[in-house]
Image 1 (cartoon, rainbow, N blue to C red):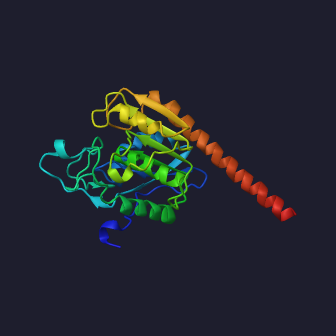
Image 2: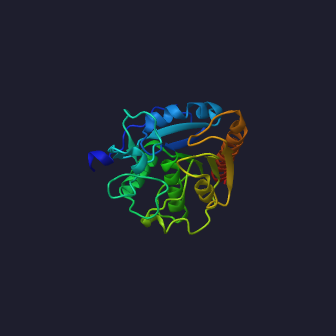
Amino acid sequence: MSEENKLKKPCPHTDQDQKLKILAIHGYRQNAEVFRQKTGSFRKMVHKWAEFTYITAPHKVILVNDLRKSDDIDGENIDSEQYGWWFNRDDRTFRGIRKGGPAIGFEESVQLVEEAFEKYGPFDGILGFSQGACFVGLLCDLQHRGMTKMKFNFAIMASGFKSGSLPHLKYYSETINLPVLNIYGETDDIIPKEMSQALGDVFEDHVTVIHPGKHYLPAASPQKHDYQMFLKQRFLEKQQQEFSKIDLEANCNSS
């Protein structure tokens, strides 16, 4: 495996088995540490029920002269190490609003996430922002069709969208029965809200949180109830599954 595709050490997290374990997938031109910092307020809101593991995408983004025309910008620090999950143009740039084009590096990113599940999992759910949310949607489809060894029970997508890359047109053909929290901004100027709505509609069981802002994962009082209720429900479902396993094992041992 090349150095580019090796699984980088994730950001530290607290190991508490009773909480939901969530794998966090950053946006384009971000990395694990940047995304961890940007989601600090979100994590505080839901820390009672969930803990997060952050990983960095395998493909380093090479900056070009005119960022506005060639790339989406999900990160703010131009000096930070910037990575992406795949590129949708031959010049190795990415924009979510592009239609057609390749998905350069996508398979390597799927492999990296599968390795993260094996090394740091199991994970109950996955969280993604922007390109990361688009990636999460594709991973959900792969799981739905039995095309990946990953197993997870819910997803959280912020500022997400359906990939327009040609290799991904075969995705989204069936409604996916998976609990999803779909978050997007009314005035998002990078991913129009209609694109995020379309991604949410792929899922039979989706909760939508719309905020008045732009391209970010909000964590203010108007969103607090929806975030907490969604994760509390997933937490209770996990507890119930664990109790059922204990009862089944007890019955087997007593017979």
